[in-house]
Image 1 (cartoon, rainbow, N blue to C red):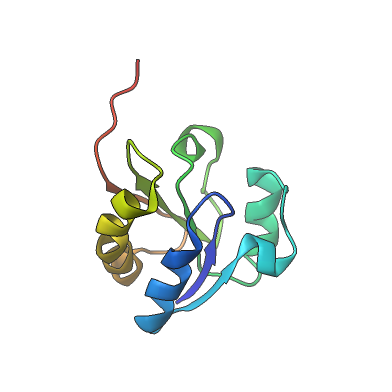
Image 2 (image 1 turned 90 degrees about the vertical axis):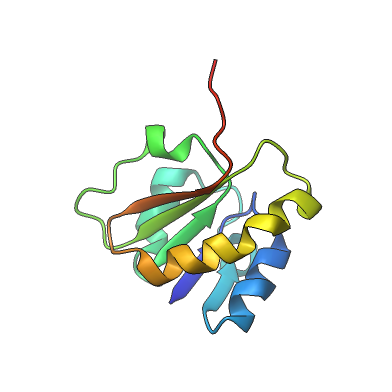
Length: 113
């Protein structure tokens, strides 16, 4: 799977997924730092199968209908690496299951006020 790791996600996630056999690049490595989600998805779907992000708002901001790319959202109440690392295996599992145009969320259930 060709995975683009969003700039808000930890770089350690790229390393973890690469060891699982996925081809991973960060948004920074792709030269797309600061590009907003809609434009980022349009660029990414030509080179990647999945965008992996910790941006929990993306499901509410973007529609994946008619897109070739899928999104995995890592949900956590904390963005600390030692907490996020607990969900890396779930991210790898999501990559095995996800289909183009699909969005999967892994990690913690986060209540919205």
